[in-house]
Image 1 (tube, rainbow, N blue to C red):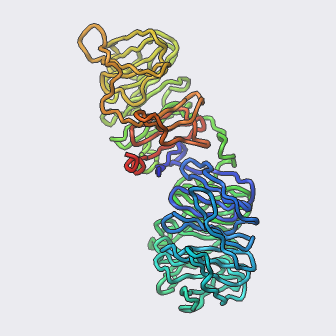
Image 2 (cartoon, rainbow, N blue to C red; image 1 turned 180 degrees about the vertical axis):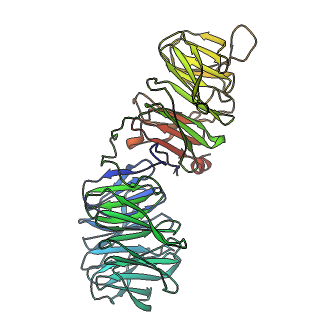
Image 3 (cartoon, rainbow, N blue to C red; image 1 turned 135 degrees about the vertical axis):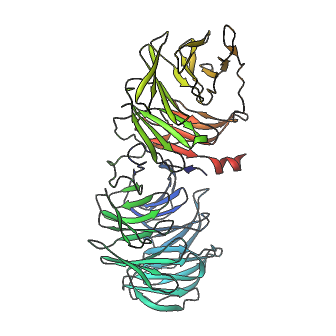
Length: 551
């Protein structure tokens, strides 16, 4: 529904996050932005964008040890130590079907690419094949001589599946129960997303093979026994966990090598999956999100609903989608530009702005211009020259907002009952408006050249054009040029969650929840939402696909 483009302001867009569970987490599966976690006898559904719980599914009577989504994300299947597998309706949170027949723990489940067949592997040493529509078992495969640890359909062939067992064998089957191809060695097995390769592991070695030929592509070595492995969505990386540590290998380059190591869990890692980030679950009751290419250690474990400690609160954010950037400034005076397509930091600048709440920035002809209010002055900083190029005196010591126009020509100051504008380059005053109502803040979207709009505490909006030659700015009667009818409602004083509202219908169409519910600062341009937080995080959401369906 919504795509996160990343945006954490610590070194290369670090996006590590920890979700604390109430019970040990044994299983993970991910489809796009939806993550299912097996936690005790429950299944917790998380939104991977905002890290918050969406739903909790109850129905199993013992620990959930295996989870999988159908290829289209419409179905969720679980396997449990209560000896059953279940098919879930994610819209209602209810059970569609329960598959009973195993006499031991169901250790693994898989659903065929065409969503017609469910496979389950059990501690009773058998594999059962079930009709998804009928709920009936139509084939029992007895070929392993010990627990079936993993079962997986080929992502490209609904007729073939592969299993692995405590008997340290990997075997291929058709849905009639006949073994196809030779038996190979391995304790567990999983496929790449495109089905061209699979990785099997046991002991300190994981082996990547070509699915069609069975030829070994590479063998991966860890310092202790592998517990789980998975492929990245591109198939270029393989992640494997051993004990408390996660290893990531680049397997497609001419010299396959260990690419990254992650340390942060305090107990054995029980599951790995991959969406836009690598996700791990552990016996330490946590689920961690790791951003490849970022910091290799996870921050201190925190509850997802709380704000982690930090000393660099984000004080302002701005958005220039046409130039592909967002801009943030923090309480240490550091201004950063972010590539909204990748979430990576493009540039970082140190400024003297450390005490001001009110700030703004714009990229003007490849020069980043930054303004802030300090005591009775507005300071204008050129980050390219690393110098203060202008200051202007304000009539009050307190501000309700400062804005630099998108073309860089003017700086606007909002006081309690007045708005004033100056030339950004000469400091010359170009107009002032005094009004009766109490101003709330400057409109976060529109400061287009000479025109500016102001929100009032009664929720009304008024605008003025400061580019006229007359004695005073011309009122604009609250009209907005080409303004999207979807508006961002953000309460910077933590009085309510940030949401996207249809101003025509008066209804909410999206709302941030969890840790990211209440940004300290937010900008919205009709497609992108950029939010800055006291935690030091910057969140960038792309609503393009969602809005195309909504409109």
